[in-house]
Image (cartoon, rainbow, N blue to C red; front, side, top):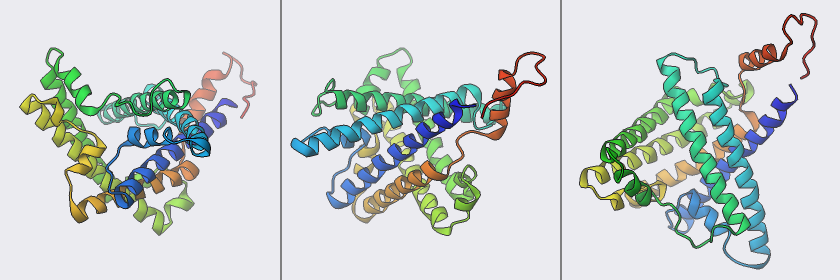
Length: 280
């Protein structure tokens, strides 16, 4: 199938874009003492002038393309089970997470594209976590939905930690890369740090729901704000390792399950076409 290699190439660009964003978040936290999230990093690329601005806009364009591709892959993974999660209860939870991740990355891609095209001002505050939490709490049953979102982040943090403990993140890597000790440790430490951040975001959302105060909600930057001293630097360094592991995934990750490819090839064959050929 000619479309699959092209789709996988774009998805790898998405992993690379995610990796660059996490590396920059870690760099700003460690070198500049500035706690940022992905939107802050992308805004900084649109600031400045001259050659710096040109390079920043080119980088934003590539990041936007990568985030769109990654989001589309996650959404399609949820819809067509591209990674073979299955249709039982466990698989349904995994695919729901894939769908949410896909939607979030597509939104981030739109934000990056808006910055690159000048549609979104680089100094604009954007849709911050507290504004999103406030919008959610204004809905009927908003407090309950915010608490459920908080629990989802906490469970996501536990899942990241479990993946780090059991090295689950290696299952989708090429066998040669998975056997490299440095890749295992970079991924393990990266997933632990990401799990800590997810759990902290969940705590912030839970507190915001309990206090009916959306301003207490927060994202990645606010999660880092809750830490101080060495703990903040350690978690930031871990996020940098997650970014490095994302770059490894851009090269060595298996994007589509072979079983899924065979399933799509079977669908492409004409009915009764026993001798039909399929292009690869």
